[in-house]
Length: 403
Ligand SMILES: Nc1nc2c(ncn2[C@@H]2O[C@H](COP(=O)(O)OP(=O)(O)OP(=O)(O)O)[C@@H](O)[C@H]2O)c(=O)[nH]1
Ligand SMILES: [Mg+2]
Image (tube, rainbow, N blue to C red; front, side, top):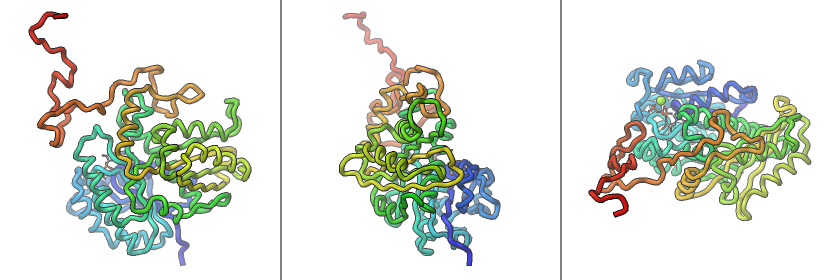
């Protein structure tokens, strides 16, 4: 009989791109990696072995994706249900990765969930929510998927608003680079979490801990990741360094996410030299960031691959926190990217030392009667907002200056 494994399933284009990063890491050797998409090229780029790739609805989508139609996504993935069941049948636990807002993942996650339920596989969904600037319709698709499909049946859903990236990125960062950064953070979170779930040999956390904090509640999450190595010449311990980097990491949305969180899941990974003392000190330090009412779950694991290095990862969970997510974004709009003690922001894509943060499209201009319609964007400008207002043009009211 084959040994049951932790499976990670990518769904849709965003899922496949995160998967590519996971597949390139040695820690992934202990995981079963799979991918399903309606887009042949995205699937081929996922880094998953060919036998574990599933092209959905190939006959009528022609391997070209669903073009943002969630109904097509659901139909296409439902078409592969039998195959999906076969692929998932020896999974002990399942982690599903994707970006909501397009067609395949938004429509397909409900099918994946129903297969997982039939096979009685505990499942965690880790899904991004689209950037606000991607438009109302994508956001709506994403919200509806979470509300109508996932929350009614899923064990655990981690929703990560992409907008959290605003708190650290320069306004000049290309969207592609922002996605890259998100992918890197998500892939590290998956590797840390699965390592602890697989063999939390220092401090064990298991699936029931996760589902207890995430189960069937609408929540908004953020993730923080800090990595530090022995011998970095920073004058502070590697634990403090990992903690600092976590607090400045791009998908966290600021250190106050901890004090406001309803729950936080910490995973710590280190080499065989990581002692109980060091991990306890670090996890205590991390836990101190949380509020008194926060439900904290901690897990720690060691592995040869992490010799001389530490990876500290946190998933913060806030229930029904849409307003707070907006608040985080508004705060982000009013400050320049934060920098670590090393004097640089915690991402590889930041540039332009001291560059001023431009206003983000968060303080909405009034759209009058167009307020409730689906916005039409052209070159990132909302065309329903009058041009003079969008471009901040001075209006000639026929008066002389100072009159
Ligand atoms: N993290 C990350 N998110 C992405 C990336 N590309 C797109 N997204 C986000 O994911 C959402 C869904 O996009 P896709 O994954 O391309 O959509 P899909 O599920 O493949 O659906 P269709 O292409 O319409 O069949 C987008 O609205 C973005 O918010 C990426 O490379 N990384
Ligand atoms: Mg796609």
